[in-house]
Structures are given as structure tokens and as C-alpha cells.
Length: 60
Image (cartoon, rainbow, N blue to C red; front, side, top):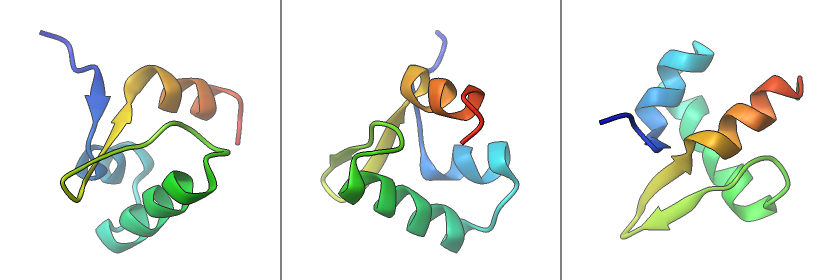
């Protein structure tokens, strides 16, 4: 089954950034709600793949 959401660790690999930077980036996206959609479940972040890829492809 294809993933519908990314984890922060997935973003580390996709963006080539450190784990600390990825967590800070995702937390900022979660709080600002202006980059891509972030879902927080019991302290864990999940990023819907479609929302993230749309943001990434727009060149932000």
C-alpha cells in the first residue's frame, strides 16, 4: 500500500536536512498553517503526502 502521509523522518530523507531541522520545520508549518498540512497525533506529526508534494512542486 502506498503511503498517504509522511513522517518527519521521511522529510529528513526527502529534503536532505537534519532531524532537528526537520522537526523545527514541521512544527513551524503546523503552527503557521501556511506551508502544507500537518496533523499532530499524540505528539507525533504526520504530513499528508498530497499537501506536501503540492507545496514542494510550487517551489516554496
